[in-house]
Image 1 (spheres, rainbow, N blue to C red):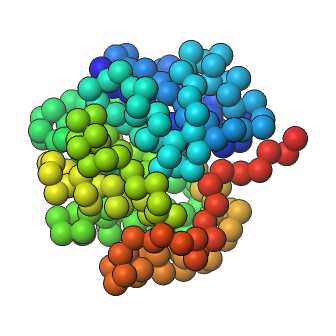
Image 2 (cartoon, rainbow, N blue to C red; image 1 turned 90 degrees about the vertical axis):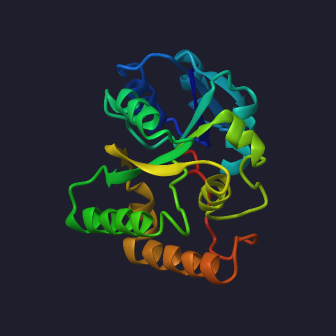
Length: 234
């Protein structure tokens, strides 16, 4: 069984699309857990109506960890609320994970956008994650498959880290488990943060964050002013 864990904060606009795509999956042996950070919009109601289990959340690392505490599955899948899964995503992913004997896995990304700049930016990210996979693993927090026993063995996500806690997670996991990128699936992800904060600004912020990771290690202060979620319009 697979436990899909989604941290949320005011995601009434995007969450229905993800939950809808989960209902359309050809692979059916999974549960959905929404770890909500006290949303003031309809996020929790939407999740409950869809049949998801709703638990307390927080910042992404905290939400993922708390969701994992309630997970019944042998495997965990961490997603963000603004991704949409193709109908055969889980089926193909699980099959490849078993074939490759992965214990931790992620997938390359593609933008939910037709803009050339967005495709270029995401292609660059994909290239970089592939190039550093063996010696400095990265993985987007919106797509991480992991055996529950591995998650527990490394103590889950480090809740003290303010940015790139997902990269720290797979780096630690890869030291005790077989990690790799899936080749048969890619995950479509929203470009809303690029639209909101600007492509140049986000690119510069991520480059600076990566330099910090390489030279100084995990980011424990919010020096990059990275915010989780989006304010409700209500």
